[in-house]
Amino acid sequence: MEEVDYIIVGCGLAGVSFCEQLRAHNKSFVVFNDDSQQSSVVAAGLYNPVILKRFTGVWKAKEQLKMAKLFYAELETLLGVKLDYELPLYRKFASIEEQNEWFNASDKPTLEAYLFPKIVKNDNPFVNASFGFGKVLETGRLDTSALLKHYILYLKSIDSYQNESFDYSVLNIQDNVIMYKNIRSRVIVFAEGFGMVKNPYFKNLPLNVAKGEVLTIKAPDLKIDFILKSSVFVVPEGDDLYSVGATYNWEDKTNEATEAAKDELLTKLNELISCDYEVVHQVAGIRPTVKDRRPIVGSHTDYKNVVILNGLGTRGVMIGPYVAKQLYDHLEHNLPLESEIDIERFQSR
Image 1 (cartoon, rainbow, N blue to C red):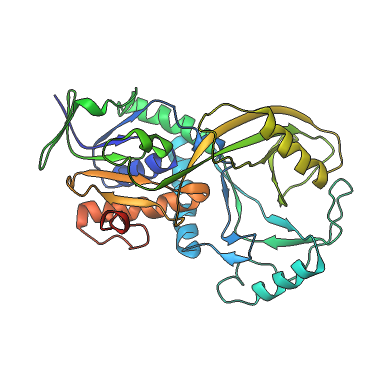
Image 2: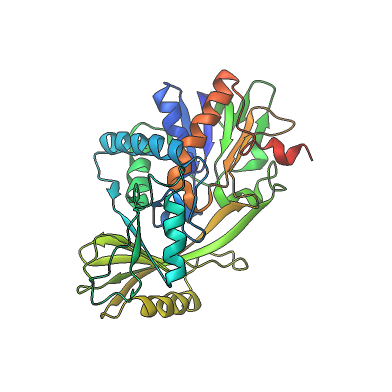
């Protein structure tokens, strides 16, 4: 019989973030993961403290960024791989009115650290941006594919990883003990993303799911060294490769790439850039989001040692480390969760 402090189900951004809290505090754990959820891989890995549709701040942006930067720097050291690529984000202006909205937003105390207060002139002949750009600071790209690939290798190296689907039917829950096959644990944490809809303990929570698809293009003439955001984002990946995304589909629940999404992205891309390019890759995944756009964190109503960490949405790179620490402190030190993320906001109704 193997004994651990925690069982973790899922190894996306949520699972990795919580595993790192456990590792930092010398807690033993084992991770079950079957590669069925692709949202963390599909995510372009952007971190950005500003909601660019409305020029408003992201919830807890300052706290999240501070924690995330340190978190990923430590992971780079642990894994021996480059993960964090700091890049400014240029938001294309569509009109004079948008420029004025930008100036108004940049004067706000909560945004002045992130919004460059001058218009950036477009000097790239292959980018269509006659009204210029707004420059967002403290932004960048995390290589989520490299992170998950190398983190799983690390977990395997310390015998803390099981590459298999989790079988809920053999989970035995007692007051202070979790029994699963040949493993005895104090707590089980489900960080399954979209997989939560099949989880008998949490399947009734209000998880909204949106399929997203992202292209990778090769565009040797584009030559941008910033994240370009318009109706799509264009993110430099190196070697003249760029990620282009992302779509939102609320009906399709598969991880299969589609021609419809490809056509949608290319139509928007062709309005933004005018150079030649080649599509070299396309991926799809399901994003787990919540109707109030906050994660779902905490214990099951009837089983306090059965826990969920889910609903990170499109900003998982930033919010993952922040909510994982809250969950750890809640479980180990009985500190209250912030009401905005606490599962109680749904269970008490």
